[in-house]
Image (tube, rainbow, N blue to C red):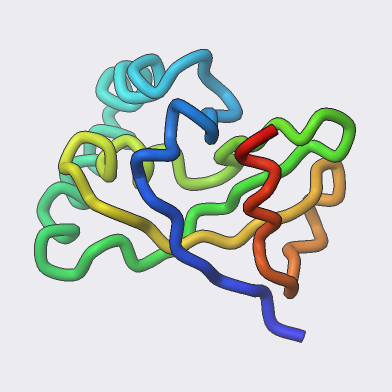
Length: 114
């Protein structure tokens, strides 16, 4: 069965959906701006998103034990979505710690209102 792909409002980043590797989205942005390869990725996204939007889905994790929701893969896309005011982005999701099992079922939106 193919992975489920949905759309999430960018406004949920920060309030309900957190970066996995950084304490804040601003911290994620600063990190990516400091590293050449990441800077190039950010520049590419800034140039292409106005015309094509975000094409590659972000990968969102939901921790089973406490329902913490986080971006596992796609931090640069999330940073640029926030920066450019992109209204929503495509995403797929998995129950953490089962990273290899991207879900075919719809996202459990109720976890955002814990």
